[in-house]
Image (tube, rainbow, N blue to C red):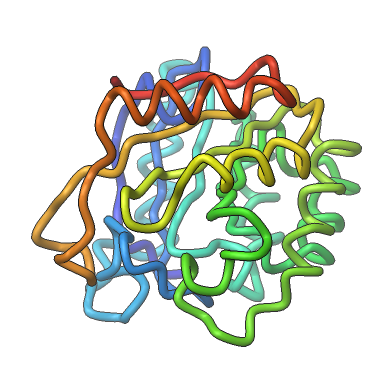
Length: 229
């Protein structure tokens, strides 16, 4: 397993825990607003191998609570289960980020108790998922199944949507709210314009728009919050 990024300590990526964040390359989506697109298109070079990572984790035992695994899409890695097992044996909690495209693998990891917290991106309402994810033939059934699995099987979880002015509107959040109604945790994150995103024409919604979207989705998901503003 090659590691394409390591944040040695974070208080934000794993709620209520001190963790490090491990970045893995590769993704099956092409979101036009992605902040980590160098991990998607393969231009990012590995920063270390698995042996170096586990040496780091051994030194941090007792200092870190957990490891957040993100990407890209970690579930694309065929050996992700072995990787997570090694982390678990070191005594760490594990947070897994996913785009929801691999429900079978997600279910297997949860059945084996390898993920303590799952964070899944909800790109948009089902009717606008393909354009928002950059994949025209996306299987939305897999996304829906991952939502079901997480809500029924994950020990702890959150859903989150990066809100982009050109891609989301009030109706988006009516549909999303109905879809994930009753979810334990759902966050709206304001898109931040950066030179590294694929589509430079995209822009951030206003704070007023974010407030409207939050009010809209809270009719169905009372726990919904805005993160980062």
